[in-house]
Image 1 (cartoon, rainbow, N blue to C red):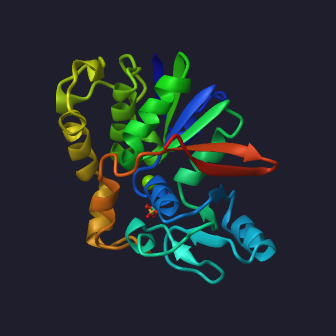
Image 2 (cartoon, rainbow, N blue to C red):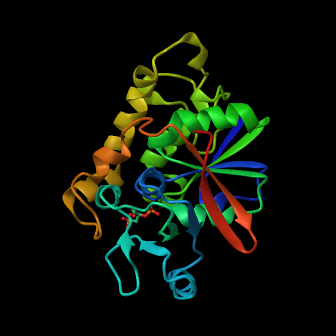
Length: 251
Ligand SMILES: O=C(O)[C@H](CS(=O)(=O)O)OP(=O)(O)O
Ligand SMILES: [Mg+2]
């Protein structure tokens, strides 16, 4: 598999298959929303677009990152969402990076949205449907967010991908690997993931969330974002009319 690792601004063309990675916290939050019963998640283009959708669908749950704001029902915190009953609800999500990344590749033939909590399910979906070339969209920090890059490299490795290309997806020094997949050697998922999770735990996003400098967060957010394979499903985003809609896949 030819794996590419790109920031949102580095996407030169619409990829055929894209995995949009946002560990902290958009796609950890999305996975928790599905775990709490949400039917679907509409990925909003802007905060105003999210509010306009909420106005048309008052029973939809409007969610944003950063501090709470008028008109929004929730914030982009997995810890705060884990106690909310979302059975049958539609969530409208707008965040700084993750939702922007999915919308940037909305015309791809397959868009998976991922974090560590759905890593193996995402790798399985790639093995089933991925094709020869996969573009991993590293949504944070212009493609340099370590938590997102580590997660993308891990998923690529579990999907049996080849050596990451030179653009940001370099060899994983933590694990001393050249990116050559060894998923087939029976390595346990936890052992295989240890170095990648350590990189994410040491990331700037993890530090800022732990220090409480980011509004709309909870002390448990970082640990929840690092729960490898917490959920058995992947998440596929696709256009439904004019809306980019995320749904669980394959559980
Ligand atoms: O909600 C998040 O964690 C971030 C925004 S910030 O880093 O907290 O300001 O957005 P995301 O799009 O989930 O990376
Ligand atoms: Mg992020």
